[in-house]
Every structure is written in C-alpha cells, then in structure tokens.
Image 1 (tube, rainbow, N blue to C red):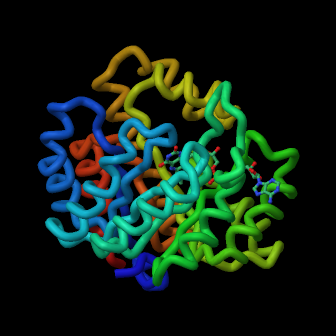
Image 2 (cartoon, protein in one colour):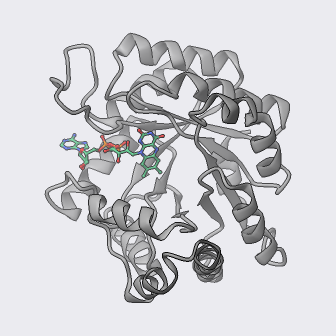
Length: 289
Ligand code: FAD
C-alpha cells in the first residue's frame, strides 16, 4: 500500500520508525523487534539507512520483512551522499524486486574529509527523488525541518529548496523531531503560504535518555523548550523516571497534534518496542478516530 493513500484517510494513525541494529545478536533478533512493533498496528513502519554504508545493506532486508512477513506497509529510507548513482540505482532495484512501494529519499550527512559531491554523486535529495521517480511507481517521501536544516542560510531558503523535492516527485514530507508543537504549526503555515500542499507528517521522539538528547540537541542546534529542559534536569540521571516522563511528554505532544487535526504521526521508536507500546496504549481511544 502506498503511504500517500494512508495519509489521505481522515482518521488518526500512528506510524513507527526502526533502525537496522548494528550488533550481530540484535540483528538476529530483528524479526522479534519488527513483530513487536507490527503487533501495535502502526499504519506503516519506516526503516532508516546508514548514510556511510555500515547498516545500509540491512535496510532492504528489513523493509522486505516488514512488508512481506508482517504485512505492514514499509517505508525504506535511502540516502545518496555516500553512494554513486549506480549504487543508489541498485538499491532502488532491490526495493522494487521486494515489492516495497515507499521510499524516503534523503541526502544523508556529507561524509567528513571527503570531496563532495564526486561527479557520479548527487548533491541534494531532490536529485535522488528524480531518479526514484524515473525508476518505478514509488510513493516518495522527503525530510523537512521545522527549525530549519542546519546548513540552510535561512528558513525561507530552506523552504524554497523543499520545492525542488516536490517538483522532482516527492509525495509527502516527514519532519525532524521537535519538542514544541508550535514549531510544527508555524512551519506548516509557512509551507502552505509558500504553496506547498503535500502532507507533512510530524516526527515525535519519546526521549528516554537525558544525556543522549542533550548531545543531540547541541549538535543540531534545535530548541529544547523550558518545560522539557526541566524534565531532563530533574530526571535525566534516573533512567526509569526519565523514560516514564519521556513517554508522557511524547503522548501529550501527540494528543495536541491529533486534537488540532493532524491525522498521521510518526514515532521515532529508537528500537524500543516497549516505549512505543506504552504510547499506543495511552492513545488507544484516539487511534482510528
Ligand atoms: P536535502 O533536502 O538535500 O537538503 C540538504 C541541505 O541542502 C538543506 O540545507 C537544504 O536547504 C539545501 N538544499 C537543498 N536543495 C538545494 C538547492 N537546490 N540549492 C541549494 N541548497 C539546497 N540520515 C541518514 O543518514 N539516514 C536516514 O535514514 C535518515 N533519515 C531521516 C529521516 C528524517 C525524517 C529526517 C528529517 C532526516 C533523516 N536523516 C537521515 C538525516 C538527513 O539525511 C540529514 O539531515 C541531511 O543533512 C539532509 O538530508 P535531506 O534529505 O534533508 O537533504
């Protein structure tokens, strides 16, 4: 099933993200991981792609399992910054052969200490989007950033660049995580004003590890609202309390988004099915309405 058709439905869905586990043992358990997430009834499951190789080989395999063994629509991420046109084409062909219909087309982060782009590499995700569009009947998603992409000279320029992705054939957008819903609402308002009408799926990260999020936010320059900072200061060193507070915070974000008419919300599960399960349980009366 194409994700764009799910996004057009007028009822609340939750979707989930997995990343290919790195360790051998974890990878061997990937079936169980997918099974636990699939049992929650997500509208689709996305699987990330290692920008610099590494776990990227597993993305096609995991997307195949999600879709063909567990019967859940799969969204395979695909990055191009560390790949040649030919390598990217090969992965597109593998996804097509596995019957995976949905791809999130990304540039990926530019590899350090490397000449970029080489003559047979793409500079931007929009170019990858065009290649996927020319390669088959895929539903294509793209990334967007409610606080602006760190490399963009301004939010206006970043939104301007999103248009290239849409012109190249992108059907929907998924946001970077954010912790203040007003950032999402303002961003979508700016997109609509710029004539961008595709669905914009908010990405919500349940933060269950205080130290990790402080590092991530320092690197991305994203904003931590005072309410959220207090939670991390109080519970960041108490793992069980931090996990509970992170689940409650993410649940509240989702309730607010749903109440304001957002119909599909993507949960960055960080390969923690028990965290995703608690969020689904918290929202059991909202899902599907
Ligand atoms: P682009 O859309 O190419 O944008 C990159 C920068 O270039 C932006 O600043 C943009 O404004 C600018 N730009 C775009 N087009 C032009 C143009 N024509 N002229 C001038 N400037 C331009 N990374 C992974 O490695 N693996 C993943 O699985 C993964 N999944 C992600 C999922 C989501 C939902 C998000 C939000 C991000 C994900 N990332 C992933 C991270 C992403 O790869 C990085 O943020 C990367 O730096 C940018 O990727 P992009 O696709 O947004 O790039």
